[in-house]
Image 1: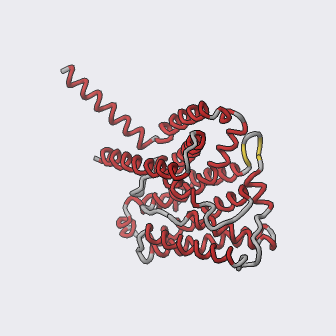
Image 2: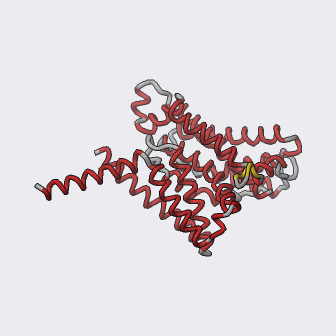
Image 3: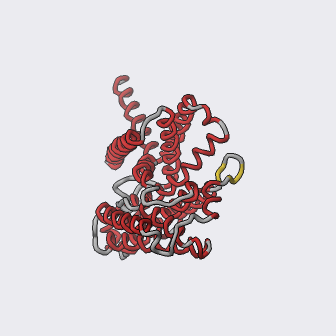
Length: 332
């Protein structure tokens, strides 16, 4: 009886651990983040300084915005591989329209992103193109648009100059070690965390990702949900691209591309199911912070960008397998 009871106790502990991992990923991830931060600070002591904290937050902000878009796409059972090119396009449009003033320039940048997101959503929701194929194709188109525009000296309106407002937001400080772009991040995070669980669109996104056919039978216009989702994803990518251009002080056809795989990894680490219908942005926030600290650690160890991409890819593969396995056991 004691052996049987011990086995039952261990099985119960295993179920509790799996439940925590799936239901409360933020708790586990927060512990992982602290461990990573301390380990990295041992290698790079500057991480304990105000400047070190600022650098982590400064780099985590655009990654978290890209990852926010991937989280929404994941929740519908999709993915968006065009987010970084949407970011590059938005930064380029804003820079070429800078002579008309910040309101006009930023307005055109957001409108361009909305148009691209709508096309992605129509392709996925109306024509049933797989999100992977649709967004890869869109990314290729946008790469051509931005490359041709820059090569021709800015076919939209002449030379490209980053707005002073974006330079201030992208590189300025809010208070102490907190960068000004963190204010944008906090605002987006509050809207997403609240909206996903409190708004009609947020709840519908979960429903579509969980069972799109049941949603159709219940009268939900699934194609409209896809369009709305990919438009929001594109706007988030545009904001990230604008902040990156402000931080770097330049625009280019590939300046945001290094964020693509980490943005997917952050959403996966955060516990959002790649199969749709389960997850949230709170875990993604911690996932973005973990990856930013991991990147700092790899840089301190003088690991090249190619190896970094390998590490991100392995993280995505490993955690995708873990979450799928855990979710299967949980549903069983």
